[in-house]
Image 1 (spheres, rainbow, N blue to C red):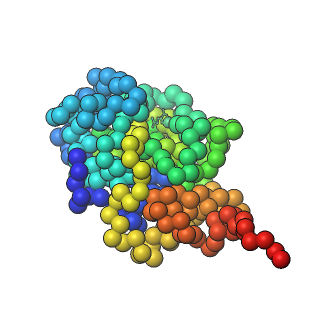
Image 2 (cartoon, rainbow, N blue to C red):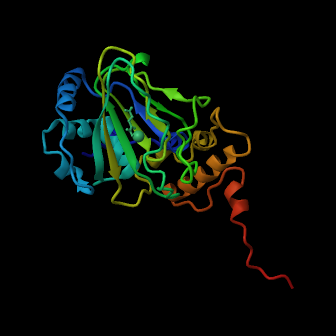
Image 3 (cartoon, helix red, strand yellow):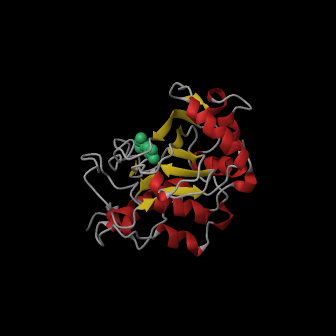
Length: 271
Ligand SMILES: O=C(O)CCC(=O)C(=O)O
Ligand SMILES: [Fe+2]
């Protein structure tokens, strides 16, 4: 599954740490999408939690070939490393002709790990129009602690993203990202296949780190999103710094000294 050419750069990785998602438009070729649509319509049998990818999806099967596409394999390897296991997968169907939107939610709000994460792959075999109930997500929401009350009461956050994409698009989400399936007001069924992956290795420097010192890395990590209030938006930068430290192994990395100040507990005793 490895393809070093398609590993993410540090700038792309930093963008993922800030946004909580990575979108690869039309990376799956048309003939595979036609096949994928039929595979999803038939349903994909469940696999037990913790099944290695190689066991979950037989060599040559549709899902295995999807995961072997160079850009998909490279992104997955950069984010969770070699040998991830399948947490669960599911075919998400949005029926045509109305229905309800899903409330905005995170898939596992008890999971507040600051230094590791799962990724969720979402594959769209069809072109998704605005009417078709593409997934709504809120950029930069994945590191906000929401484990004491869910986000379903939040509506129309500024800067939210209503997915509209060409056929064969794959999106990777950090497990914490706030999202939800939108109402499908078109007359076609919308399919999406989601796989959650658990890493089995430490998530450190798994991407192409040759551009680690590029100033755009810090610029990406310092990004702000329209729904942040000025003061609480610092929480996101703070949590991104913690994650970037874990991902790079650089315990002194910081932006504007946010983590440095908060972790300052001098041991020196005044004389
Ligand atoms: O169908 C969608 O677009 C999102 C589905 C989803 O995230 C969920 O059911 O948890
Ligand atoms: Fe979800």
